[in-house]
Image 1 (cartoon, rainbow, N blue to C red):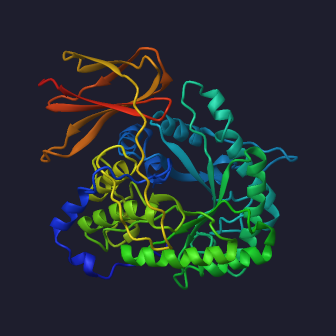
Image 2: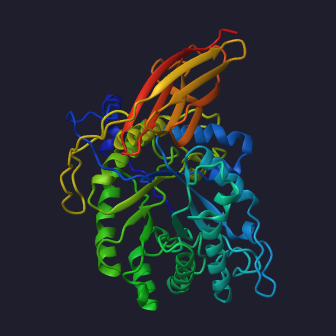
Image 3: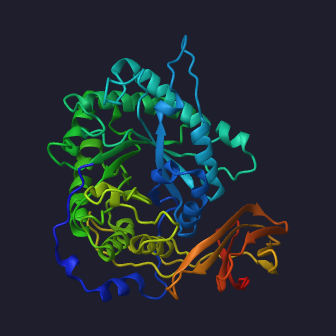
Length: 487
């Protein structure tokens, strides 16, 4: 995707102790950063390319780490492999249903990228962009995704045992200013503007509240990627009615260092304000570093720093999605294979753990949020410290069946609450690091509930985190320790 290499710099020479101190997220007592729900996410496409039996382990770790959004493709070619007949479309939702169900079971929301035209609608071999004659078919596909998985969607009515987490944001294509994803760049801004306008109109007809976002633009990297600002200018020149109606601009600001990233964001922010109108949100739908060019400890420092700095940058960032949870790690010579921040066995890399710790801190779930980061796009309003709403009263009882290695948790909030439970164990060789074992969640209720979890053998003491969320937004947290059976 035209990602740059890393060329040393001051941060590369920082001693390890600096990273350790930064990971503590020290802040003045009582300070808190206001980060909206859904701000933090991860690109999880590779998770769903693996066998379904492996999904739960990975999704447990995402949810336990405070992530709320998982970006993955909605492939047109898999959903509609055959052309419509007499104007009637036939959809195959089997792959996407399985993915969305797994996400919802872990309290995660899908952020789809609508791309990959089927061969009956594309522009020929090795060009999966929709031909101009099939723009209407792409719009029909976009509307079908919204009807299936959006607010009030068919999927949620068919799966009433799930807590609905409908799609609210739709990303239209991926890096359309890059020859990797839109091979013919000569007329790409104009063709994409037509595609975006048609998809936006069809999605809004299904869900007027939906956010329809310009697909993540790569920052200029000739000759592979066209200038992102000129791309937007040509879009608006071709379809001027789009100005003032765009819900967000996707951006992939891959840069060598954190400082370079923030500097480029400041320039992009000013250009978007000029071309599209002031204040159009920026959705960072990909950002990360590869260990093919950067040591892991530095990558950990960089992703956690951006997680803290971007909400306070003044750049109008609506969302941060790190690329990627997993990557293939097959070819040492291919940097694209080494962006993953998590391991295939379900354990976290240093960068993944640092990112999740930053997310938990910035969302106010654990630790303290980093504050006082300099505004890079103008002045940021001072952080307002307000009293946290009081959490609900939580009644909790545990019972352990050591013979069958089962933990039963009985929980109730007399005034009603939603519940989230995470069972964690210490990682081998790491006395302080915890890795998820099981995760349970339940929607708002005042009734007594019974949760069962499997206890692994010889895991020593396990930590059970229970979070009850009341109707007023307050949270009550309880921690219990459970000892696993020796045999």
